[in-house]
Length: 335
Ligand SMILES: C[S@@+](CC[C@H](N)C(=O)[O-])C[C@H]1O[C@@H](n2cnc3c(N)ncnc32)[C@H](O)[C@@H]1O
Image (cartoon, rainbow, N blue to C red; front, side, top):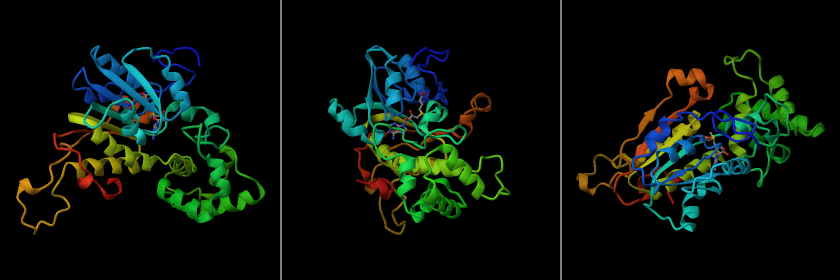
């Protein structure tokens, strides 16, 4: 860790936040509130949120990556503190600090990987650089990608690459991995990237993309349990919000955005699953938990400047005054 670069970030690797100003503007609606930045990264959004808060405002950040926690030490603002934990533990971790349901004014989630994670070959996220095949966001715990690829069955590998990579050639790639590892354990990003490139037909339509893009995305999502994390964290955030509190979520691919969209849609539409033939008065329906959410995309100018912005979608929901209940939520989010 070392110098502070021109974007005010610590360390050798830079993260240019997507919707850097827009997301904090959408989030902060009272300057004296308690806010949560569930994905600190390198603190681009955190710094902008703090700039909007009054002296009595507070910001608690989360990140599961020890390097992000290290980078956060550069922020000495007394209104700020950080917790090293996955954001699926939002409620428990805030309860430990004395904050319960309805105590938070806004939660921001900028999900996925940060540029410092992708750009550091040692983290093993990228097929562009050779490094150990790790891919864990939290390097202090859990199984890494190489360990998983060494022990998973061919059918499990197929399922992961198919489901989380939406990769047409999942079965073929898994077979190649199972064959290769008999002779040569797959422990580096280059080894996996080259193997996938050899296996996937060259003629595939999306030739702009590296052939291993989808496989790497899939293994990363699986190793970090990314979709489960999101499914757990959204209702936790909703429960923590006070009436009029804002939940802002930036996602980077359709698998994530689908979950966010469904959550907001169900939480704001009490009548959706009720058979229209059942005669119910409006006051007999459960009350909506959120107002209908807004969808915001980065501008053309931002996408030109920051290619990561191209795939980003921000959804912002505003909490109603209805007491929290999970009965409206998609089944997998009910507790
Ligand atoms: C896209 S970056 C966030 C960048 C940040 N908004 C900024 O401006 O610097 C995503 C960050 O969230 C963290 N992260 C992803 N999933 C997480 C989870 N389930 N729990 C906690 N942190 C997570 C990653 O480690 C990464 O540092």
